[in-house]
Structure formats: structure tokens, C-alpha cells
Length: 143
Image (cartoon, rainbow, N blue to C red; front, side, top):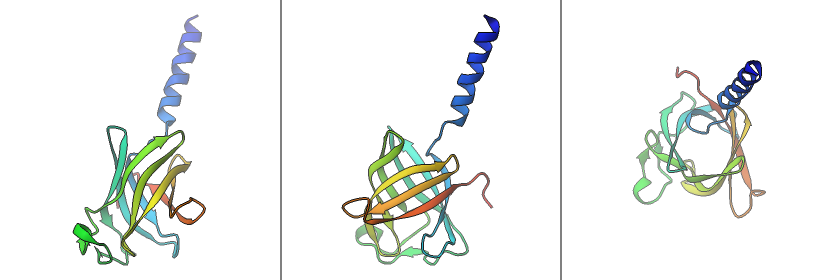
């Protein structure tokens, strides 16, 4: 009986340790040139996820959102919220918007895990079939 309880506790612990969490710091990799561009921090409040740029990397082409409109026009990318209103839906997060600072447009978004340390972030118009996917990699330690 003791061995069974111990085995069950180990199983529960291993499941909880391997659970995928969206929150944390992620390195973006541009889907067009393959270059790492920024560190993004994804946060959660009341089961709603958002993300902001926390650091630009040397390959970043932009430092400000020149193409954005409204209060984001010419805003520095560092500190800019680029992902908002994402909600868990099974093994995906959706329902929110992602900002492309290169053109200043917001797109519908779906996020899913490729593996424990890699996100597939898809921005699209209308249907997910009409969009682009970037891979974001979990940052274990910042450089």
C-alpha cells in the first residue's frame, strides 16, 4: 500500500512539473529571415494572457512602432504590448490579437505548443489558413 501511494505521488509530481505554461519569457524568431529579434514576456491575469516586448536583440530591425496608429504610433518597442486578450481553449490560446510592429496591424492569433520550450504563434486575417506562424523559444536565462 505504501509503495502504491508513493508511486502515485511521484506520478502526480512528474505530471505537474512537466505541465506546459504559457507565462514566462520567450525569444521571437522572425519567420521571414530566421533571426532572433526580441524577448517577449507573457503574463496572465484572471485567465487572460498578454505579452510585451522586454528586450530587443541585435538583429531587431525596428526600435519604435512607426507604422502603428493611435497611442502606439512611434512608441518604443520595449514595453509595448504586442499580444492581448488571449484565452485558453483546450491545448491552444486564442480569441486575442497580436500586433505586427513592422506594419502596425493587429491580427487574430492562435498560440499552441510545439514542445515544452517552443511556441507556435500564428497571426491571421479571417481564417487561420490565411496567416503566418512564428516560433518562439522559452528563455531559460537572459543573455
